[in-house]
Amino acid sequence: MNTRQFLKVSLLGAGAAALCSRAHALEFYPSPSAKKWAVLYGTWCGSSRDAGVWISEGMNGIAQVFDVRENPDLSSYDHIVAGGAIRSGKVSAELQDYLRKHQAMLAPKIRGLFAVCGNGMQPPGTAQVKALIDQHLAALCGISGVPSRVFLGRITYGLMDEASRKTIEGFGMPEYDNLKRADCMAFGKEILNKSV
Image (cartoon, rainbow, N blue to C red; front, top):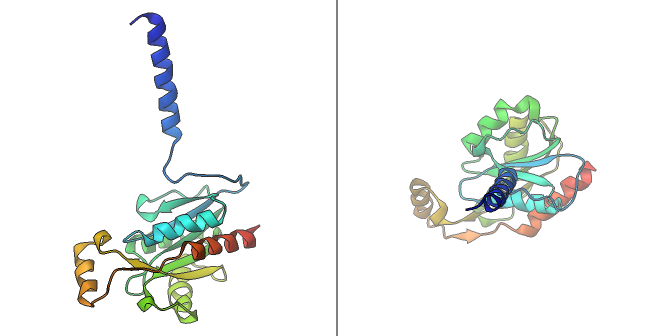
């Protein structure tokens, strides 16, 4: 290899490395925003991940979406939407711990809360919002009065840990998918419109 080829290959390699170091999963900003938005979720089987991504889509994709298991540093974000999947009336222990630990930083930034649950495959109403959002998520965050929504979820046995799968199969619960992208996007639009 001559010197000229070596320099070309070296520059191309350095440029590719620089681009890769800036790439992050789920970062997509089709619309500019003067404020930094984040959606934080806790999930067991992926329903809340999808809800978070779709909420961001409803906000024109300006929010980065974070799994609480990544222990993200959200201190530089101006606006945050938080939520998660519900089991036995509560979000995951990881999300509960994160919200408690960072409550002082998160509370003034929370612009919306959401929960994803099976609810016996029945449409959630005010009782579910009160129990899952007002008395649980909002209490963990130390806030009230922000837009909130409870979405129906889904069961996918292949995405569950074995103990949970056996428990739910024991109830004779079939696999189902009641999480609606349009509902999540509408919630994202609502949050964005109230925060502008």
